[in-house]
Length: 227
Image (cartoon, rainbow, N blue to C red; front, side, top):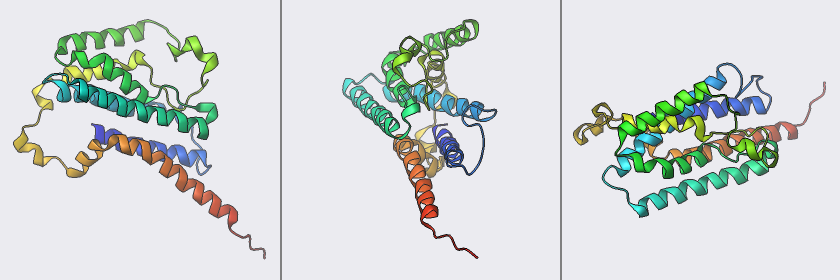
C-alpha cells in the first residue's frame, strides 16, 4: 500500500509540475479526478501509518524508538514548511501529511493493542464528518489570519485521523500478516520504495522542480535563429 502511494504521489507531483511550468493546463489538485486521486494517495499513506504502528509497537512501546520516530518525522515536516515558505510563499505548508503523521503517531500509538476501540473511534470520526458541517481547515480556521490561506498541502486531524485508526484495526487481521517464510515473495523494489518512503517524499519534488527549472533556463538561454 505504501509503495503504491509513493508511485501515485510521484506521478501526481510530476503532473503538478507540468501544469506549474505551463506544459499542460489542468485543474490540479482541486479539479475533477485530481482531487479524488489526492484523497486516495493520502488515504493509502495514512492507512499504512496505522498498520505500521501495530507492526512496530505491538510487542510494547519503546520510548527511545518512539522518540526517534517522532524527531525524524517532525524534522522532515519542519524542512517541508521552511522550503515551502521560500518556494511557494503564498501556499506554504503549515500542516501537511508529515506534520499529520508526527502528531497522529503520538496520539494513536497507545491504541495498537486495542483494535476494537480504534475501529469505534474511526467510525465515530467518519460519521461526525458526514453529519457535522465544519470549516475545511478546522481547527486552523481559528488562526487563519496568521497562516497560508491556500496551503499546497493540508491534512487536518479531522477527518483524516479515521484512516490510521482503521489501519490499526485492520493490521490485527491475519490477512495483513505475512509469515517470515513467505516474505521472499514480496517484490524487492516494492519493499525498497516502502522502506525509503520518507526519503523519496522529501527528495522527489525538489528534484522534479529543479529539473523543470533547468529546462526553462536552457530554453531561455537558447539563441533565437531568424530566417
